[in-house]
Every structure is written in structure tokens, then in C-alpha cells.
Image (cartoon, rainbow, N blue to C red; front, side):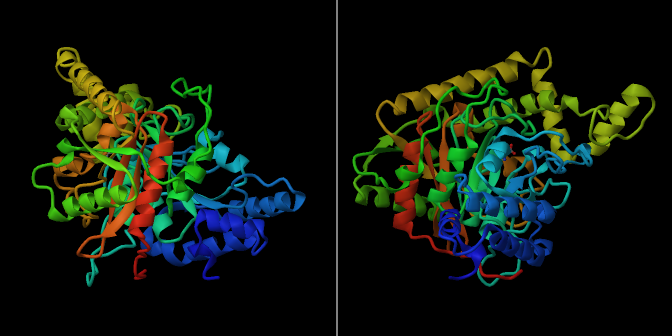
Length: 491
Ligand code: GLN
């Protein structure tokens, strides 16, 4: 056996079950790897080694007693927007200061109750707003992947950049992440990892720091499609504490990964063939189509005519909801406070100092599009566009089982390359926001390396509540791609 930290989640669970190693040994291996690597990679913004060892010992006990859970002994990383009882949670924003929740998010509680172990909290864009993780109060993480022959530091994407780095660099078996407009899938695509955003309402938002409540959804970043399926099964649950949580059973998805795609109808939406699309991305997409066809899927050309309005609609709806959600950070109840003159002065100082530039930009846009006189022209219109986008999907899902597209318009880019121009940064989300606007499950799977040696992902979008097809198609693509790429260690 190689390094314990190289294992997949499924492989580690097998090793724990057959007593090849203990959870304590596995956890210690990850703690050592994090100590060695995190200064260079900045994936974790807080490590919890003592808690991890304590949880690991308790896990070994449960296994010895015959009461092992479904994730018994699996050391995981947690995105810093999940509230973790007694462990600092900041969404990587100054405004949350040293906020330490007294309660646990439902998603993380589900993981612990199945025996998982927490290694620490993972880096992200401030309040999950961004596509490069450059807006974190703790500075960005570094993508373990670099262009061939280059020392340039690349972004791991965002907002779940820390989760993607930690998985790609073996600093955890798998990680939690969240996706409002692509924040699971884009970092997965940039790091050669697998990520899935389940159907809106599958996972509870209780205890997740809110960005845009009608779009936010929890999901995992993992090394393989099977690992992603395993984790999604546990993260999702009906939760009466989230009014948008769907009262549905979470089916077992692990089996779907190996079911194959014979007989499935896969739609190729022509509007995703955007102007100026690089020939590499186009070739990757065609490769994906060929792989699925070779395995017995039927390929169908489909149209989603309102796709071009998705990005502008997203960048109205998401900031609007953010401006309302983030109104709670006023320095009065929790988090950081900067005193100013009088009550209003303190509000102003706290928010001016506590929020970074990108968050402030979103709050201003959001407040503007919700203000009287502009509400109809912007917010209401964006909501109507959103309905049209959903109708487009409903129409094509009358004839196909899933859709295949590239995850992103490019491979990982360098720091500073897009951060000077917000529009340029927002354009990175062009293929991912549609699934959030329509609430659909969507998975990214690594499919190839580009000419510079960087990973590229393919995206599978499924019908509402049909994560199973995403895992089926994802598994088929994974097998065909045989993607075994690992970043060359420079850190
Ligand atoms: N990049 C998108 C944004 O900045 C999506 C972020 C996310 O999914 N949390 O809004």
C-alpha cells in the first residue's frame, strides 16, 4: 500500500473495515500531511488536530464495538461556511471575526453521526462570492497543479478553492463545499477532482452561512465519482429546520456509478457552444460525446434558448439575495465590530471595514436592483428570465435523460489574471449558473489535461432529483477518461 493519504474515500473505508489501519493512524497521516503542506497551499484556514484525534479514537472504539457508521473513520475537510459547534466559522470574512457557533450545521452533523472525522476548516472566497478564492480574508489557496515547466501560482477556482486544493493535494479524503453559481463544479474542474451540486433542497441549508438562499446548495468535492456519491448520500437529508428542504428520501447513489449509460439519451445544448470558445474546450466536449456514444448512449442535439440570459440574471438574483442576507452583519450581535459615531456610525464602520471589496460591490448591486423604481426593471425581470430558463430545461428533459457540457470555459488561470475586471471573472461561471437558477443537480468530472498539463472538467446536468443519472454519466465518463492525473509535487 502507498501513502494512506493517497487513498480514495471508498478505499480508506475498505481499509478501515478490514483493519488494515486504524482511524487514528489514518487521521495522524492527514494531520502530518497538513502540517507539511498547508503553509504552501493555504487550503485550511483553521486546523483542528486535537479534535480530529479525539474523534478518531472515538471512531476506533465504535468500530471495535460493532457500531460503525457509513463514513466511519473518514477524515474530512469542511468549508468554512458550515457552522461547526465550538469551532471558529468565518466564511473567510473579516466581519465574522472569531465567531464560534454554538450549534452544528445539519450537513456536518449528518457526517459526524455516520462516523466522519473533522480535520479543519477550508478556505473559500469571502461569503462564497468569487471564482478564484482571491477574496478570502486569509489569502487564497494555491492550486497544486501548475502549467508544465512553469512556477506560476494558479488559482484553484472558487468559491470552494480550499476544498478543491485539500482534496487534490491529499490533505483530506474528501471535503464539503457549496455551490451558488458553480462554486463546487468550477474548483473541481480546475483541480482534477469530482464535485456535485445536488438538486436544490436535497441538502439542508441549516447552519450554512447564507449567500443567496434560493441558489445555495451543499455538496462534496471528492477524488472519484464513487466517493462523491458516497458523501452526497450522507450530506443530503430532509430537515424541517430549512423551509426549502425537500421532504424526500435520499436514495443510495453509489451503485449508479457503475450502471453504465446504455440506452440513456444525452442532450448536447447548442447554446453552450459560445463565441470564442477555445478549440481545446470544444475538443474536450466532443471527446465526452464520443465516449458516451461508444458506451451505448444516444446523443441528441438540444436547444436551451434562454441560456444567454442566465449569467446576467444570476448576477442580479444572487447579489439581491446577498444584500438581504448580509444585512444581519451589523456588529451588534456577533462577529467583528468597529465603533463609529452613534449606532449608525458603528453600523457603517463595521460594514465598511468588515466586508471586502467584492462583497461590497455585490451588496451595492443587490441593494440597487431591489430599490423602488429599479425592482421591476432588474430583479423582477431576472426572476422572469429564471422561469424561462427552467422552462427550457423542462422542455428538453421531456426527451433526454441528462445534458453534457464543459464545466468551465478555461482551465485554471493565474492570480491577478481576472481579478482586475469583475465581468471577466463573472464570465467564468457561464456554464455553471444555469443549473443553480433552475435548481438542477449537476456534476463535474475530470476528463483530460490541456496542452499545458492542466485538468479540464466535463459537466453533467440532470433532471430535478435525478442525481442518479449524473452519477451514471459521471461514472461512464470517468472510466472512459481514465483520468489518473496527479499534480507534480512542488510544495
Ligand atoms: N462564482 C460565482 C459567484 O461569484 C459562484 C459562487 C458560488 O457558487 N458560491 O457568485
